Image (cartoon, rainbow, N blue to C red; front, side):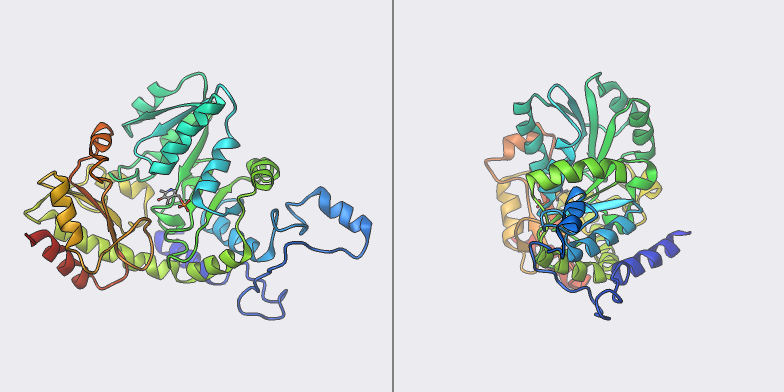
Length: 392
Ligand SMILES: *Cc1c(COP(=O)(O)O)cnc(C)c1O
């Protein structure tokens, strides 16, 4: 299948796949099952069902038909065997890491990562789990950073903020040769634009609170992997830690997924126009978007990504908090707020004044501004940016 055919297939998955309307009296969308438990007509059947809560409906903390409809779609989109949805992206990431390490193990991270993931890695040290973060996407550097204790390589592709591209095939092959598990956060690209499992990555995690929900009304996470890995995660980290998705969130997710392909094309198109505008702007020293020919991974990006999302960042020539603050405060269409990946355009900077030293330590420019490019017309967004940049 070529890229276009894969996209059509994904579009069908987002809209119709696994809806089983015949099971639900022809309902065009799956009903929202609000019940917490399922009853049985005899005790023997109940005992049998309880033995395997992954494939039988027993209690909502394990399975729910509405959540399952969404899970089957996500697994199909990622070309994975199975998926479980969580109450947040962090719940999914925590479960994936807790499932993969024990005391004394080491996690190798490829920089840069989402800030809360970094905090989680620091938190895990209280259980004797160590980690190192390498500020490179080169396979030789990754190889050199592996220790005898390394059990997991954790990454985002593209990497956070600088959107650098990791050679997923090479990392997966290297990890497999050493018995190391690979976990990848695919929230930026979405399964429409990148399918990490097809390159040999073991576990894909998502924050569904971003593009997959898409309307700033849903918090959720997902983990997509093989049946074998999931079997253990379901019985331990899913059932026991209990950060599961509820049916009402699942119905919002199903709704978000229906328009995901169209939204992603629009985010991609808007972000590309904005990145081009910003890269020729006199007040800007750098724009981080892998679709720009000036990006260091412009070629490499095409090996793994079939499209680009709307989360981009740029650096002001004048690297001061005052300047960053002024530009952000002068935006009218872009709203100030956390998160990203929804219909509305958002602006933020990791440069919060008090944070300046910390971000310098991590090698992030203090003139950096992050945009989540929404679905408004590109002309409107470019005009907003230009006015804010030229304000004095
Ligand atoms: C937001 C985010 C998360 C965490 O997801 P939540 O749903 O907010 O818990 C994880 N990874 C990335 C890249 C994110 O941007």
